[in-house]
Image (cartoon, rainbow, N blue to C red; front, top):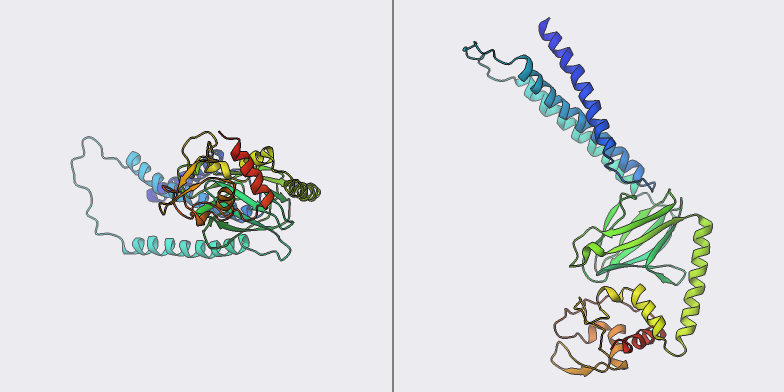
Length: 342
């Protein structure tokens, strides 16, 4: 009768502590805002695991603390405790039950992954290029942006590739994280369900400026998305037409800021992953093979168009991202900007 009483008290305390621990974990705001359909099954699984964590923590702590308080030895008790050989039944139970729980969680996890990777045949497709240290988004309508716009409640598949080292595309509000690899395309499927602006960061240590490899993501309505795409297509055509004329350093500076050039090439003489552009034009440049060339217009054009052909001494080969999407006129704008950096 006494043992039954202790068992009831311990069981009630376990339930109370389990609830307190679970709601305490929830109150600590472990999860950022849920902003994608793919986050729903992921959060559900995490919620289940939090409940199990709270329960098993209580199962361990309550009996231990209860025993220390209720069954502690009195000061005048000098006798030895009872001799115990073990309990085979208990050992089987605490082996079999966790095994069953792990198997069940494995099955749930597999179904969870199936939901996250579900393919919508009508999904939008956008190419993503990761490079040290930034993101470039190439839209099927023929323009490029350093910001990602996504229509709400529509699945978008990002075809991702790195132009240098391994990166990882991670948006906490979407929950999904996927590696971006050089020479290999990986797919990232997301269906945003909450309007707003979010930040994508690189979750794979990729170099000295890894912490600053951030990009803006905007989830907008379908009408806003269509309007933005139309505006970008129009702007891209205007820029292309303008670049066919006289090179312009102002457009070149804008490209320097938005195309990712500034991530590697400084415009003030400071050292970067690539040679500084400050004072570069007209100077002699020593290449990795020991030859010396003059940084004239032709050299700069070739270095942007085909960077692997002439590697500057002291810098790694094949480190520069692929900028083949730039039009010749845009490259001339960049060269015109370089000329101004004395």
